[in-house]
View: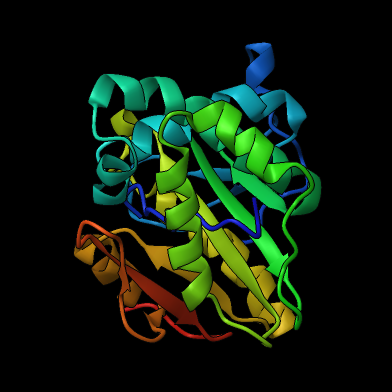
Length: 242
């Protein structure tokens, strides 16, 4: 949820503004096409807005994409337990972003980008968050709360921006430009509105990906209790990619 931060993972990280057409992948068929990405792949990548019917599918996509990230391994060390906990955990964030933010996906729901608009004042904690978190993550809830606190300490204050809470691509679709398509789709809106974007890169590799797409470091690294580092980053409106 927007007050409780989660790692931004490029999934692998091309696209312009998506259509307002909705994804219908949860119903077992493909949505109408959105806006194709401009890229070098042999097929176009289309970005569409997700809706409530996509909740389960996108929660699982994020859980699968984030499973082996260093922060994920600290949150729940056992891989089998992590596979059980992550889908309901990420469902909290997808549900909140669908209600209060912007969720972009592909027509077949193999990727997701969750954006939360943040005003000049700090975001408030969604009602019932701690109880929902405990139900989804027990017996590892204390680590998830510590994770939230670490990210909150670095989040920009007094700056209106959009927070990229999560971006993920299903593992078998990574390396095809889908993550970049989702990223650039919303950058176009932010540039028009004159708003910056903020995210937390999960590791040095993803930090490098975002540096090449117009982001810059925003303060020092976020340090988790086991020494794992994440990297807060900001993109100013109009910042170009390499």
